[in-house]
Length: 79
Ligand code: SF4
Image (cartoon, rainbow, N blue to C red; front, side, top):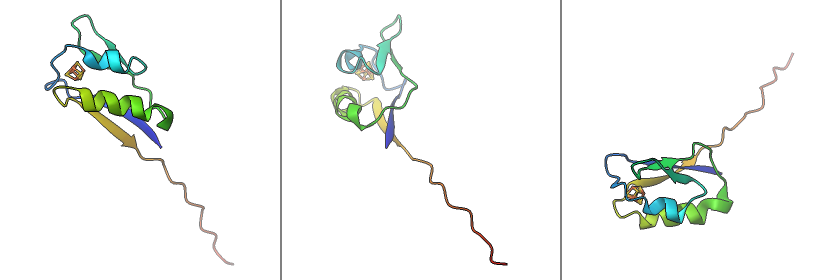
């Protein structure tokens, strides 16, 4: 399962604590607000992302689990 981080820009205080905790996904703009990587990541980074979410003082970070597309086999008609 792939995941992505999202930030609520209204709730965020812009002190940039999250970028120190999860530099793999988060950098800061010139005012200190987080820039979240648009690339999804896999479970190997989940603990780092969860730590950033749990330690955000404004609860402005969200860990979003991306649904994997399920492909169905085509139905074959009997002739
Ligand atoms: S830790 Fe939370 S409040 Fe602080 S900059 Fe990051 S998202 Fe914003």
